[in-house]
Image 1 (tube, rainbow, N blue to C red):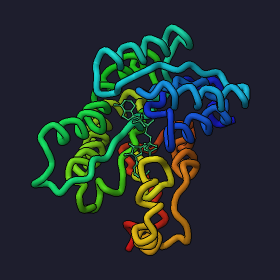
Image 2 (spheres, rainbow, N blue to C red):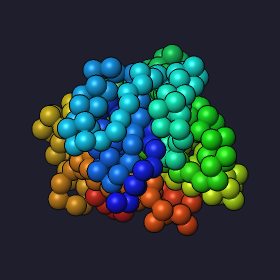
Image 3 (cartoon, rainbow, N blue to C red):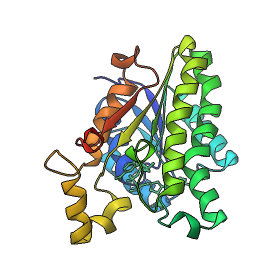
Length: 249
Ligand code: NAP
């Protein structure tokens, strides 16, 4: 198994891509911390993991709050004794034209999507330095590479994740902490449900994706397994685009 006995924290694991990553990690032998601010979602993920005999703990976590991040990592260390992998996955989207977006909404999106990567990484890096190894994977988006209308804060936050990922490589690759990110295209989750149920938008999304289907959480999960495994030790600062070819056009 590719992640045998590795300890992983996955934020936003109560739904969609985060749940897919948690399940895939467990299937590869990892023990996981499911961190999400949704207790209902988190508990559903825990149930699914227990059904496949995985070891798991849920921590109610708002990733934009330092105290919650502290509790998330403490729970991981108390339960499993170390943290090998952090997946910064939790994220939100708020659709507004830029001139109509409130400052409060801008701050919320940046705090949940980008500040969380700073807070989570800042807290796990000292543990990884002690261990002499670690993997940090953040879920960015193709919206960090190309523009999407009504997504100013979202695009800025995802572009910020890509820039921060590269910065962190310079500080931590020499210490054998791998920092990479994944840029998904359109993946079928709660986040995209409304778009996919609207026939005209669905048609636009499908016609913008050269591969003949939209993405599933498992598509991202398999990329995350690779970046979390020893197979990717020489991969540093990569933006792994998993988008069915959207940005290749
Ligand atoms: P999702 O199904 O909405 O899942 C996101 C999970 O994160 C939900 O359980 C959500 O809880 C939780 N969450 C939101 N804010 C949080 C916070 N402050 N603290 C802790 N948990 C929080 O979305 P998804 O599609 O799986 O998205 C996962 C990541 O992939 C996000 O970073 C997203 O930007 C990125 N992404 C998604 C797509 C796509 O097409 N789906 C494409 C590119 C990138 P609630 O539901 O209760 O809010």
